[in-house]
Length: 308
Image (cartoon, rainbow, N blue to C red; front, side, top):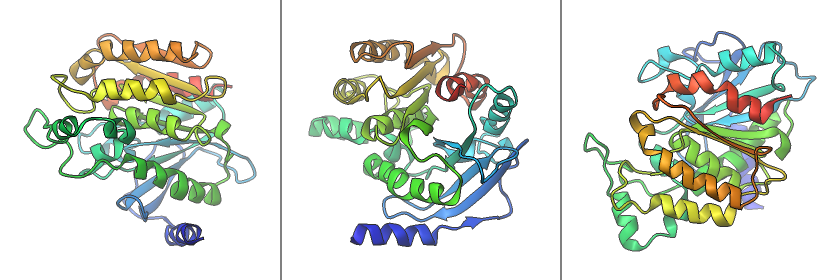
């Protein structure tokens, strides 16, 4: 009862903000929940993209995407690149290649991004020594990966499922069932998307995992994370009869780490009964780890998950 009351209070406190400085889109429109409040994670902006002709009299599929600040407008991103999701989806809709969909872009919290996105149950399966090794990991520039923030991905998923999704379904004209609800991201966002469909198979019917960051950290030397994730997948992949999963990867920059790891993941998919009808892995030789690369091929997972 207390949980339900708290959820209701959070829903009421999160109102759409028609604020200035929204991402500029080439088509459709953005509506923002300014600093969406949560009892599970740090407040963050939620940008909801609605296609041209959005009609409250029709029902829409919902695509939840991570790293929302990188999705729509390169003028507002830290590296001046973006996925340009609005362009890709609008073109697919005009060509009648995908079903009607809205996009819910969840901005990350820079300090806790890695802690929010690293699958928690695989991490918790590690020994104390292995956990310390992972948490002490640094980037190439010497900065901490986790910034002394504890792994919080189970709470991050609770935020999406129990707080954000009810608000989206209440505010917009959506299909609310698993068959019409999808989740997608790249790099660590790909990893948490996979974790989401495993943890909440009753909520998400499909996941798109682009350049999935299987290492979790930025070295493979003594790194226990991939094997922990693969062991988790063996036990927890959803039913292939009712779920779709998309993977892809390149072989340049950070993506150079992925080919042998994706091969291991693909073998697990096969042993768990996934086939070309409900799973695909695409390799893009020469492609790097960037918003530009993900923009170029975003149409492929969208057609795989949302194709008519």
